[in-house]
Amino acid sequence: MSASSSDPSVPVLTIDGPSGSGKGTISAAVAAALGWHLLDSGAIYRAVGYAAGMAGLDLSDPEAVTRCAQNTRIAFRAPKEGGPARVFINGFDATDEIRTETCGAAASAIAAMPAVRSALFERQRAFRKAPGLVADGRDMGTVVFSDAPCKVFLTASAEERAKRRYKQLKEKGLSVTLATLLREIEARDERDATRKVAPLKPARDAVIIDSTSLTIAEAVERVLGIVRAALPRHATTRN
Image (cartoon, rainbow, N blue to C red; front, top):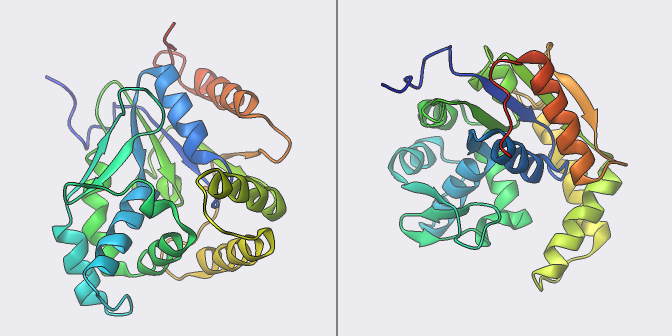
């Protein structure tokens, strides 16, 4: 029988960090290399923010947003051609829609609501299944999987993160400016770091990696090295 979602014997690698630090791409690559499950916690909050917006809810109404968090169906499906998982919200593929800065700001706002966080807490914990889990987010190592044996805090300069986000959005044909993205990222950093509930910060036992000057491959290898050192019995990468 596979281990349950609360079984501490299932290894967890948490990768926390601010928007644009590369944690989503790096987490997916590390999970694939290890053959572990992947949790994109940011996508869950973005999905609820998107669902709330589609329902015309007031994002400052904790009760309404909490009901939305409890009732929204969220599923991750790997595309046949490879790449990051597609995100389905109530049966609709909203992968591209939830990656906008507007949806990101909504996710950040509702993530500060204790009732919403409580509603989504167990949904996230349920991803902890054998053989292991790579959990990507902002409070994976400090709150959701505080007992994780391996934790990474991935960061990069605000300027570099804005450039990365600008490139991503322009490739999707979206009209954005670098200056606007930089302001939004700095504002979100401030909001996430100062919120009363689960503020964005490194766990005390996390290894901090600055990805500003690293390639994706270099960052992935650095994280895998940390896992191999901390969990040699579990960190057998796929060929």
